[in-house]
Length: 255
Image (tube, rainbow, N blue to C red; front, side, top):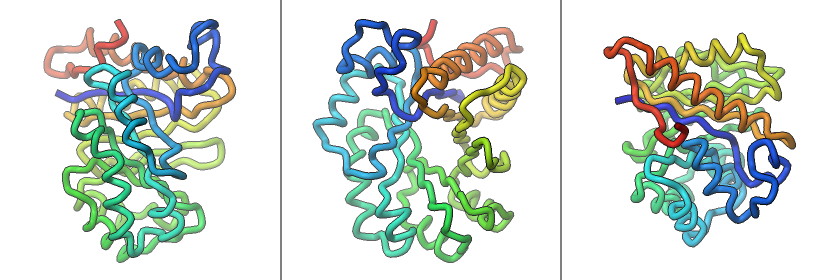
C-alpha cells in the first residue's frame, strides 16, 4: 500500500531545543530522536561532499525499519557538469549511497538544477537514460523554462518525479509525473488553511497508490520539524477514519 514519508531538510540543529529535541539531549543522539518522530529526512550535505560509508552505516544503525533518507545529488552532476557527461561521476556518487538502498532505507535522490540552467529537453533525456531504472529520482527545476508539457512528458516516460517546491517567491505547478510525489515546503510559515490543503492533496495521492515524500525547510527555529510532525499525524488521523478502500499505510513511528 502507499506510504507517506514526512520530514525536514536536515536534522542536526541544536536550535531546535527544547521544542523538538529535549533540552539536555546530546547532538550525537539527534538522529535517533528525530527518527522516533518522523520517518524520513532529506540529506543536503551530499550536494557538496561524497558521504563516507562509516557515516551511512551509522545512519542505518540509528534509524528504524521503514525510515527513508532522501539524498540531494552532488553539485558536480547538477551544477558543474549540468547533467552533461556525467557517466564517470554519477556511478561514483550512487555507490556512496548504495548501502542505504541495500538496507531498504534509500528514499528518492533529488536532482536540484541551478536557477540559471534553462530548459534543454535533449540534455535532460540523455541524462534520464543514464539513471538506473530502480533508482527513485526527483527533479527540481528552478528556471521557469523547464515547466512545460515537454518536460513533464519526459519525466513521465522515465517515471521520475517533478519536485513540487515552493518558496515565498516561486511555486512549481503540482503536476504528477511518476508513481510517487516529492514536495519541498520552503516557506518559513504556513497558515492553518495551507496545512489543511496539504493534508487533502496528500490523501488524494495515497488513495491513488502514490507514495509521498514531503520535506519542510530547516530554519534556526524548530518550526519546520513541528510542521512535519503535525502533518504526519493529521494525515494518519484522516486515513484512520476514511473508508477502508481509501486507507493507506503510513509511518508506525508516531503513535
